[in-house]
Structure formats: C-alpha cells, structure tokens
Image: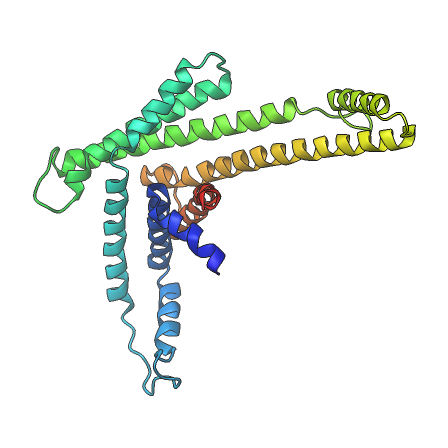
Length: 294
C-alpha cells in the first residue's frame, strides 16, 4: 500500500493525471445518471451500511430520492466538465507544437502525415473549446452568445472526431509497419544479425581463452543470442502494447463526438462506459510515467 502512495501523489499532482481523474469521475457519474435503477441500488446499499461509529444497521428503512440525487449528479458533471476545460485551456499550443515538429522532421511516412493531421485537428479543437469557455461559465460574461457558442461547440466536436480518426489510423499504420519489418528467423536458431554477432563473440572467446573448449564458447554464444532475442522481444511488445492501447482509446473516444453530433445513436450509459474505458487506457500511460519518476 505504501508503494502505491507515492505514484498516486505524483499522478494526482500531475496536470494530465489530474485531468484524467476528473474525466474518470465524470464518466462514472454519466453511467450512474443514465441508469436510474443502478443509481437506486447503489444508494440503497450505501444507506443500509451502518455508520462508521456504529456496528448496527439503521433501525428504519432509508428514504431514497433518486430524482434529486440524479439532478445533483448532473450538475456535478457540468462542473467537472468546466474544471477539465479550464485545465486544458492552453493545451492546444502543445498540439500545434507537436504538429509543427512532425512537419519539420525529415523522414515522413504515412504515419507522420497522419500525426500532423491529428495534432493539427486536436489543436483546433482545443482552441475552439478554450474560446467558448466563458460562454459556458454562468458568470454573466460571454464572448459569442449562447447560440453561437453551441454552434462552435459542435464544430469543435467535428474537429475532435477528425483528430481521433487520424490518430487511430496513425497508430494502426505504426503497428502494421512494426509487424511488417519484424525480423522472423527462418529456423529456431535466432536472428541473422544477432547470430553473426554471437559467432564473432564465440571466436573472440576462443582466441582469448585458449584453454576453454569449443562447447563452452558455443554455450556462451547461445546465451548471448537468447539474451538479445529477449531484449528485442520486450521492446517490441512494449511499443506494440502502447500503440494498441492508444488505438483502442481513440476508437472508444470516437463514440463521444459521434453521439454528440447525432451521427451515432448510442445510449448515454454506453457513452459513459466507453469514456471510462478510454480514460483508464490513456491514464495508464500517465500512471506509468509517474511510477518511473518516483
């Protein structure tokens, strides 16, 4: 438990980690408010639990007002959405910077061009979203007015959908490229380049230590070859796993703008479930980074 405390503190104080936590809470509330029966069962269970200062259950049955609770949770979702937008106020600058860096790189394949499109569209999405922040806050100060703000928000959802689509295609292209250029040994003896290195290592071992017999040198070469193979396999699995998680998270996130635009008829609870899953997948990357720094 103590080993989880430091990464959690680092995750909670990280700006991206904090935004992911708020998004996860918002997604869970969306699921609860979309299914009143589930919310009622959870409230009943919580109210039937004895207080922390008493071991006996309550003597009278609890009174549950699901409608009032759902209304309060809907208001909380709105506040969480505004808090997340405030955190992401200037994130669009980082998206534009990443797009410019990819555009200026020398080697540009299909995945690089898709990355430029994804970062550019995501930057425009963040810019429009930040511009309409004051219109969403109920503070009496507006820039575009409620009607124009709603229209711009729909345009922002379109840009987000384009960004997610391009990002998913880019991740898929990278995975296919990794699989296409993956060295496959013709036999079980190992990779061609690694085998040559191992034979050279065996020859050097025989030259330096003349008393060692050939069997020991070949055994050392075999172990060296197996170690190289394991290192390569671990690196490949780590990169492929990260790209696969990102691809799945982008596909799940595409449900949100598609449903907001009316292109996809999905129940609000399913949107919340997709949002929970994508948040966990994208938050894992931040969590791993925070664990490495602690």
